[in-house]
Image (cartoon, rainbow, N blue to C red; front, top):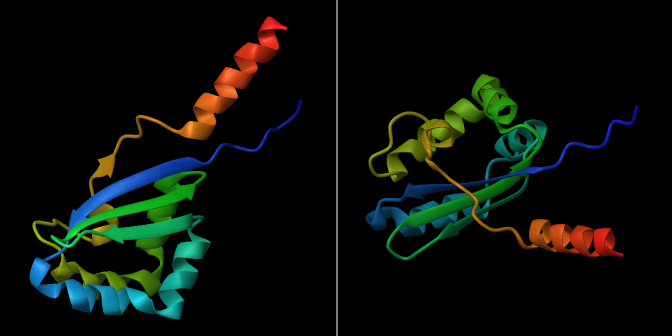
Amino acid sequence: MSTAPRAAERVCFQLQVDAARLDEYRERHAAVWPDMLRAIEASGRRNYSLFLREDGLLIGYYETHDDAASQAALEADPRTAAWEAEMAPFFVALDGRPDQGAPRLPEVFHLEDQLAALDADADAER
């Protein structure tokens, strides 16, 4: 019985940064605390990016094999609490910790998945 590696879960989320604090938010993320970087890495998240629009719309993206486990790891990791407490005031209308309270956006298209399905169909027709 083979155990194929579990596919990565792609996670996208949205938050609203206070437009009056955009420059400070960018500055803080230009050099995230090393302990926070290591905590994110240890949680199993990778390929993590944040995108910030001029009106404060923040879109985040990362990949993980188990988002629930990744969130639980970050919530339990003492390195994350101080960072998230410092970041919380930057967000508009957020209940709780930024990492936990961000609404997730459902994925509706992924190029590689559709190409793989297309290739599998072509192989099946041969």
